[in-house]
Length: 328
Image 1: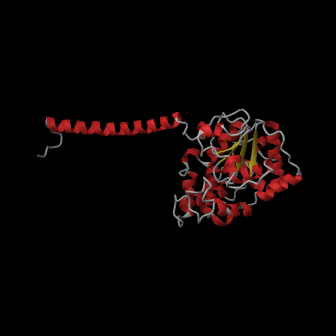
Image 2: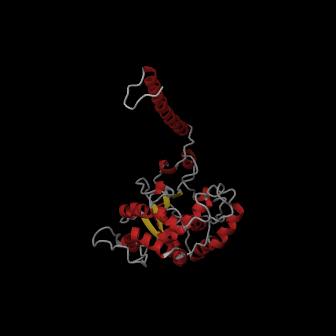
Image 3: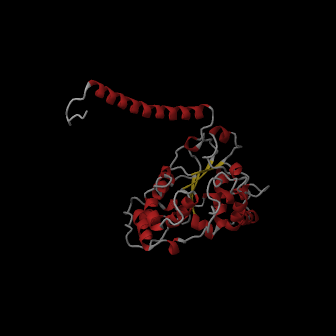
């Protein structure tokens, strides 16, 4: 029997409708309750992955960056300088300088102190000693594109022109925010402090021994007093961390490394490791879009702009002080 719009429903129909609503609401509430119970169970059993809830010790040093900014290469450089007994590989990197997202906090707490830990977190006030790596976002965009192809998030033929706006809007790995969100969260809150050091990926590529020596001095000031950063050890660390060696290791160990074992093995994690690759890969429109979004931040970090669409940072505000730069 059909009921006209606006007419009162018979009691049985109204009861069915209300019952359906209650069941729907109960279903949603039950799903939320189940998810919460699973989360509580992980915490109580010690299975909750550390991540942002990591227990932080006073002598921890954090190696922080936006994704695809050279963090893994920097881990190799530092690890090969500190650990002279055995070169760093993808098979032992997570026990030498582990990422905070792959193990429960109870496992991370048992690591020998002092610890150097990899993180992609936006500003975290509990991090007392921070090495922050920054990379030209135009190159980050390309690396991030190939990272998402490797992870199966986008197809091989996905247009870069379509990817760049989504990259700017932080649609991939949304928990990190955009490149500028991440960079500014650290630089504007820590740039004047002695327990923070900024590394530019481009400077590391140009003068790896010099930049690694800066890192060694920073580590000696806080947690790693016995680092021997003589020229021979610095050169050894740089040689053992070359893109060629890392690519060779990846071919042998990617099936077992936690970061790559569930991704496509026909796509490399360690790619060209070039500086300025965006000049031949990104279209003028994509370059202009990135510079329009983040131009002021890029310029204060020493990245030259090629487009005229980026506004100039206002005098006395919004820019980073000279202390945030890697060199005078």
